[in-house]
Image (cartoon, rainbow, N blue to C red; front, side, top):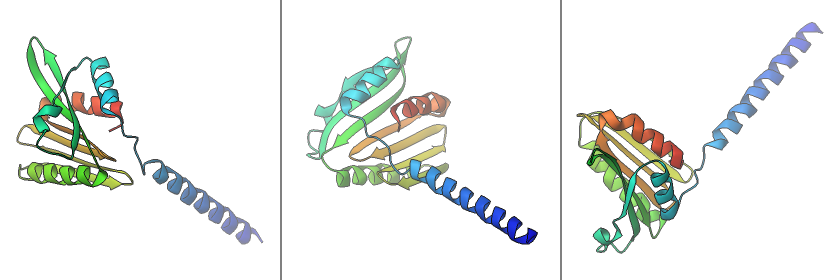
Length: 161
């Protein structure tokens, strides 16, 4: 009788852990894409200068908008990041893969994630930190000196990217 009680408690504990693990995994299956205007507002609120660079990509009919955010100190640009909006999720995925291939040519270590509606790729090497995050049809791109890695990552986290 006591063995049944212990087995039942173990089974309940295992079931609870399994349900908790599934619930935690489900929380990370999607991210919320921000608009170009939201990106600009959040960048400026973080002390970054912004510029609309959409015109530089006019030959690419799949690029809807491009906003560049720049961290400036003492009239010098310390690091930049680009936020692109494509006209479709497939085009954004293609841009993600193309940029990822370029980053992979640099020696270093990398991590990547593909879950739900987003993909991320990080690479650190040769004194650089490279980051890509695609959410739906948007793409956040950074290629910064490694010393600014933590500062950039904090900004990306504020965006939810």
